[in-house]
Amino acid sequence: MKNIVIFGAPGSGKGTQSDLLVAHYGFDHISTGDVLRAEIKNNTALGQTARSFIDRGQLIPDELMINILAATYDALPKTAGVIFDGFPRTIPQAEALKEMLAQRDTAVHAMLELDVPDEMLIERLINRGKTSGRADDNAETIAKRLEVYNAQTQPLIAWYEAEGLRHAVKGYGDLQEINAALCSVIDAL
Ligand code: AMP
Picture 1 (cartoon, rainbow, N blue to C red):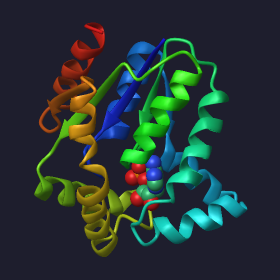
Picture 2: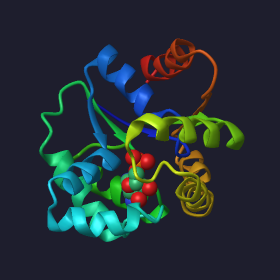
Picture 3: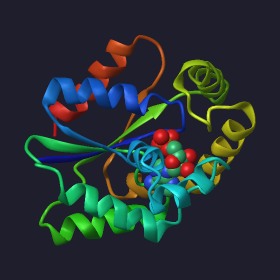
Picture 4: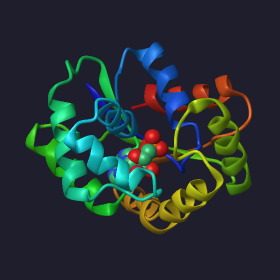
């Protein structure tokens, strides 16, 4: 049972690559963004709270997000492994994930980082916005999300490096090549 964090800026391809890894390894996939969007769609109280942050390109508060993550994780069958996509996004979230998994006698086995230049991220997100229907894929919110990523999420690179778990791969070019690079890290675990 592997616990794998897929990491990168908004638009770095975490969702796309997670889908390929799920198909290849039979992992379960937790996308915290998808969990929140489902809550918004169902118009739950949590969804209403989440929407106010998401629409402004801001992060949902750590404590709330950590509780959602733990509940989602505990509800999974957990067979081959779990991919964490979009979580952690802050150092307190990474610390909470480490503690949550330790309490369940397991750990994060790898952090897979997708490296994509900023200008490519913006182009990808603007293009995605044409078809995604996501309210946060517009120029203004994209700029805010990248700013939030640089300030709050990017420091996790050094955090996971210090944990000895960071594996960075080139996140642009051929999709299958990116996937092969991720698979070779996973196969070596
Ligand atoms: P994503 O689909 O991963 O790009 O997430 C979309 C939005 O959901 C983000 O811009 C945040 O507002 C919110 N979100 C998703 N995951 C988290 C998280 N781990 N912590 C805080 N906010 C999150």
